Image 1 (cartoon, rainbow, N blue to C red):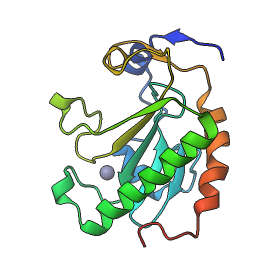
Image 2 (image 1 turned 180 degrees about the vertical axis):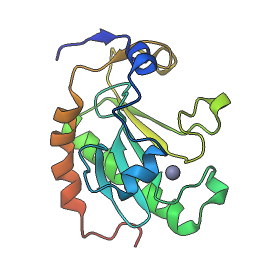
Image 3 (image 1 turned 90 degrees about the vertical axis):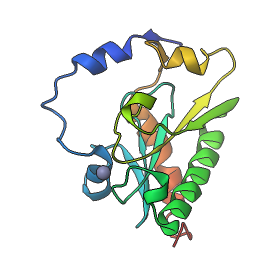
Amino acid sequence: MNILFTPWRFSYLTAPKGDQPSGCIFCIAATTDDVRQTLTLFRTPDALVMLNRYPYTNGHLMVAPVAHEARLFDSADRSLRALIRLAAEAQRILSDVYRPDGFNVGMNFGQIAGAGVADHYHLHIVPRWSGDVNFMTVTADTRIVPEELDATFDKLAPHFARIRGEALGE
Ligand SMILES: [Zn+2]
């Protein structure tokens, strides 16, 4: 596997704003039919999973409730259950597809804590491999992303399609 060290944060900060729809990315992902455009891999009535457009590593996913809520304690049990259930499926699929050595799974609440979207909470699932940079370094300016997002989407989407119909927080 080729390892690229790329200053993604810089391209993120300087990316033109015009080609993305404005508004909450999770609410857009919950309602937009074009799932590839929003990088949305799977949706249930209560939760969704999508690729992070600015990933720290290959397969960096975000799981969010469908409800636009800022904090865990704003959420109904139904949303909480759906979120962690979908996170479990996502971790299983990432394990099968990418064979990572570990994961960072976590949430940031409020911009001071590093939340890019502070008013719609979400869970980051970041696969990790031996020899990649540690998580604190990753939160600075360096990321390891050898694979294009479209390729990641194509690789993961069929696996999520297979869990459609199974009981996921219903
Ligand atoms: Zn939202």
